Length: 435
Image 1: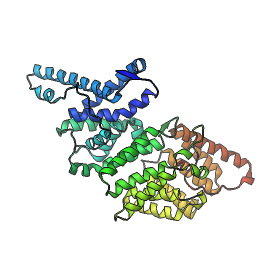
Image 2: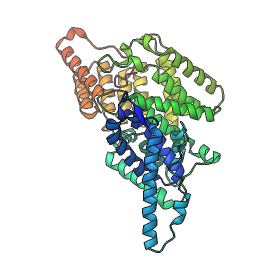
Image 3: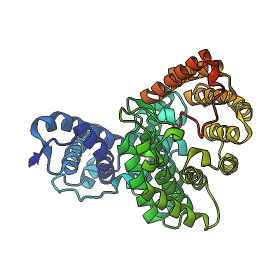
Image 4: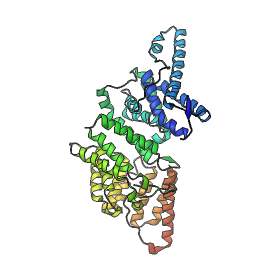
C-alpha cells in the first residue's frame, strides 16, 4: 500500500536506501554484479513510479522486492539458456529465496556489504573502489578524485574488480569473524573516504553532502560497537566527530566557504568534540598508535583552540611528522608543509611543496596550487599568490571552493594596488581546507 506523502526528495531517499537494498539482495543471491544491475532497475522503477503514486509504506522492502524479482527473471533466463546448452541450471534457482516474503529489516546491511565487498580475490585498492561505488553511493569521478587518478582509470578498475569476483568462483557471502578482521583495514579506509566526500564534496554546487558524512559516522559507530577495543576504529570515529563538530561554522547562509580563522567557534558542536576527545583519550592509553588516531589528535588540537591564534602549531607539526612516517599520502605531506610554515615560516613550507611537484598523484591537483598560493601570500609575494589561486580555482570541480579561491585572488589583486596593506599575516590553516 502506498500512502506516504512526498515530504522528502525522492532522490535523497533512494540514495540512502541503495546500500541497504544492495546488501540485502547480495546476501540472498550471492551474485554482486547481477544484484547491482537488479537494484539499479529497481531504483529506476521507483524514480518513475513514486512521484506519481507516492512513496510506499516500506520503501526499502518495495525496492528489495522489485530487485529480487529482477534477479529471479535473470536466474530463469540463465536457466533456460543453460538448458538449451544442455547444462544443469536448477541449483541457482532452488537456492533463490521467495520474493513474497517480507524482508527482515537490518539497518546494518550496508556495513555487512562493506565487509563483503572487500573480497579475497581483490587487491585492497580495488576492494575500496568497488565498495565506494556500490555501498557509498559515490560516482566514479568522485572515487577517482579520492584516489588521485583519472576517471577512466577508476572506471576500468571497478569493472575489473567485478569481473575478478565473478571469475574467482569464491562465493560473495558473509565473511567469517576471521575474514572480517582481515578486511577491517579496507573497510575503515572506505568509511574514511566516504566521510571526506561528505564533509568536503569534490564536485558540485554544495561544499558538504550531509547524507554521506552522517552515514559514514553511523556505520563507523556500528564497527566500533562490534570492535570496542580496536584503537584505529575508535580513532576513526573520533576523527569524524572532531571534524564534523565544525560543520555548522564552515559556510555562510549562502553556502559559501568560511576559512578556519574566520569561523564562529561558538557554533562548533561541543558534544561531538567531547565525545571525540573521550574516544581518543581512551584509545591513546592502549598502546600502539595508528594513522587515524594521529589524525584525530591533530583535529583535537584544532578544536581545543578557543581562538585561531591559540592553535598549538608545534604540536600539530610534531603529529604530522609521526603521520608522515606511517603514510606516503601526498595530502599528508601537503598538510605537513602547512604546519611547517606555521612553525618555521612560509619559506620552509614552500621548500617542502617543491618535493610534491614531481609527484604525479598531486602535481596537477588544485590543492597543491591553493596551498602554494597561501604560503606565497604569507611570504608577501602577492602577485605569485594570485597566479596560483587562479590556477587552483580553474582546477577544482567544487563550486564553493572555486568561488573561495577566486575571492582570494581578487582580494590580493586589490592589495597589490594598495601597498599600505602590507604582507598578510599567517593564517591558522590552509584556506582550501576550511577547517
